[in-house]
Image (cartoon, rainbow, N blue to C red; front, side, top):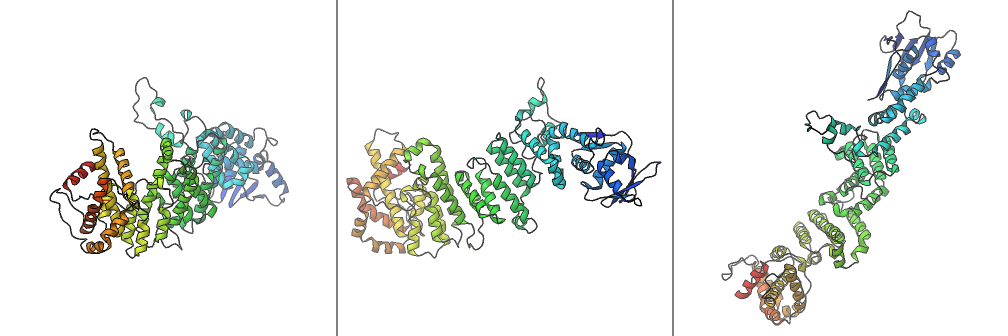
Length: 606
């Protein structure tokens, strides 16, 4: 820390209790200066020779009175004592903590060059310009001390010059940084071992670009805002660093607990803080801040009752980086009058904003998206995020079906190439809402496409008694068609043992689409309605296939499948069937009646 010593005489100021100060001298004091609650018994000559204001006040005083009142003296008795000691030539030490008060007091007393050469104002200005404003640490300390004397400091340009000094230093090349609080801690490590031929500076860690963000966190929010505006106005600071600075400040000052956040004592301060941080967010389309930080800021803004316009601004920014979020970030508690656990409407608005921004990309062909790479990754990430969020909110008994369906349908089909996550969310919702009607179960299961379920999910769905019977039939039928397509693909390419899984899946889907259309006719011919009612009574029974040695499905699924396979088998072999493309749930490994077919199916799946 920089400091400056003024005067050379010993300090002769004495105290008599808390309210009296006097100079130890052989000469009788001839004036009393009242500053606040403290009386200073001093001599006129040294004071009047340095202060133009004291000359005026003493001359106006009554002859019978030797007392002068200093009303609203900046800095109080301490700063006046510094000025008085300077007048007496006593030793005074100025530093970053007292220089602002001393400068304001000297201005009040009019200790200018017109009164005496090299007066106190001149000396303090030299100290500020040559030392304080050149020091990173001292500039921050001085800026903090201006809070108690803000109007005086503003008029004297101290605040503005401190801010400009700090903002300029944040833009310095990090390789030249030696003055940061936090970085100096690293420099002070005593047990660093320096290799021969390398200096200490070369051995220490590289200074990061955000080296300064922690140092300014102690500033009051109003001063912090002005510093950040100055830093941004320089145009040399990356938006990512700005975002990190805002995040660090928010973590430093926003309380962890919800009760402390919304308490009457700190509600206004927290609301002002949130508003300021949102206003300071970098304007680089949201790239400067992580989605996690923005979502947490959105939670806080709701809790402290921030303006609707601020929340809308956050929603827009979050939608630009939604693909980077995780499910826990989206779990924003609902506020009254909402009855759900989490604010589903808010998340719905974020997803809608995302869709609006990215809609033109989703109009492209899926192959073109694959060529872009990044677009596909972003889209799939949002799809997984929405499915994960649906699985979390599905546990809420107060979540209505319409909200679940609307959120599920808010993303495009290309964002959800695999429906396992959606099936999981639907399964949880059905479990937590057992009172759903048949029509409601059909509606929610209609969100799924069984053609997009993996083998594991299909096996689970085929045994899931919460699913409508029609969905189970679709799962079983499509899985069997896929297995038959795999067998046919192998038969058509007997010499190609390295056939890729991708080609196999394409062949399966092609065959499924060709063979699933007349399923309605087959089911009507078989009178499946009566058969389903019989099988439902046997749903808890199970058996084993002695030929394959593998585990079979529950009775309901197995019997339905047996009927389907006995009719559909011939159609698949004759290549004359077509598939009903409804598809809505996950699958299981289902052995057929033919041993040879079972062997082929196991081979194709493995």
